[in-house]
Length: 444
Image (cartoon, rainbow, N blue to C red; front, top):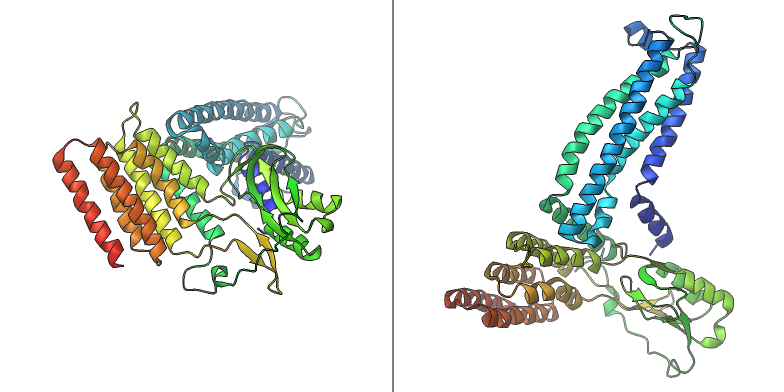
């Protein structure tokens, strides 16, 4: 993927609580020096004409700036404390893997940055005030103090926004919606080609793997443990063409890799050099946790995790699970309308250069439905909604193979429910829905 390393860097920065506040702090420092320079030049612009400039003395300016600085840093501490509590609630209610979604919340970072920036600005202006009482011969940065008052008023607005935002982001409907949006963006990014548009690589003839591939190949090993977050496939293709190689990748993004395990197999081995091995290894980006950058399964598993926690005996909230199933059905319907790229990648001369591990529609359906079916088989509402989700996805399928996958899951849901549910009328209701889905799938 183009700029995979830049994407990894941006993802790390976006998931941190220091990056955006640091930018705000830098802007506050630049603003303070700019306003102080304007004060020393005596240029106030139309603000002086309109009577909006602070006109008090040195002591008054000190009191104003001290009040702004002390109050904003106090509120910043409160905001940080509330954010930590929200993160703890999210980890306990929705799972620790969703913590990353909350860490990426731009609203919280902007709020924290605003208060920190206002605090830094006030301190920098405060240190420049000279004189006592009403001695106007000394330096009183009137424009700078005015801007500090404006920042304090803006901070009040930001605080009001934060109170609303903090109470919104921990609601289960918001968490499910944001995770579903992550899934949609991952689908659009990783499967941009829609069915019926363009030529899929799946239709291209597959070059035969050389007979001596296994005996004349070199295994590139991982240098550390971690989750494979992204693969720079453009760099791999460039190296394969440059060194006349055939690369066989053993892992796809989202998988956990052990140190010294084979990341890929390179053919032929006589073309492999130490410098090439280093370049190939750098194309694999490993990290401590999974991301949705090139891993479409990750947001699906997040929705599944929320659903499983909801139907657990300790919580017993089938309505939340049903919401997750609806979103999973929508995501699978979106996937059913996309072309899945082939495992075989060719250069411009139609030479096979790369054989990659790829996700399949069947695998994604298994990820979405298997665990919910297994843990929710005794819940009638969850079982019925799973069948309804399959019926929804079926309307968007275009191949018999995809419909067979959906029919297989419908049959498993039916069998599990017949064993776990004792009420005959509930069984009958589920049986009727299953027969309707089966008829639609077989008739398609």
